Amino acid sequence: MKIDEEIQSINFEDNYQRAVTNIHYTCGWLNNVLRGEMKTRDFLVGNLSEEEAETLSNLLDKVRG
Image (tube, rainbow, N blue to C red):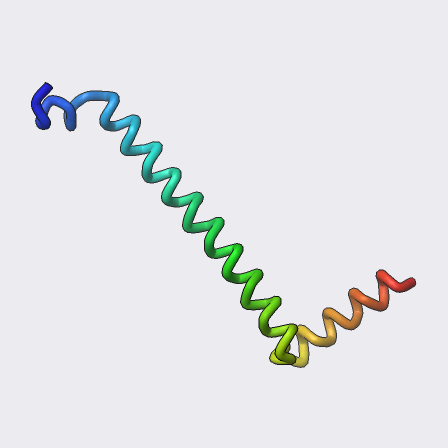
C-alpha cells in the first residue's frame, strides 16, 4: 500500500486517534506524578505555604481524632 493510501485509510485515522489519546493520558499522568513529587519535596524541605501548612495541620488533627 502506498503511503498516501495508508494515510487516507480508516486504520490510519483510528491509530492516529489512539496515539493522540495515549499521549494525552500520558501527559496527564506525568503531570500528576510530577505535581505529587513537588508537593512531597516541598513538604520535606519545609517550603509549604502558610495555607498549605494549616491545611495539613487540620487534616492531621482530624486523623488523630
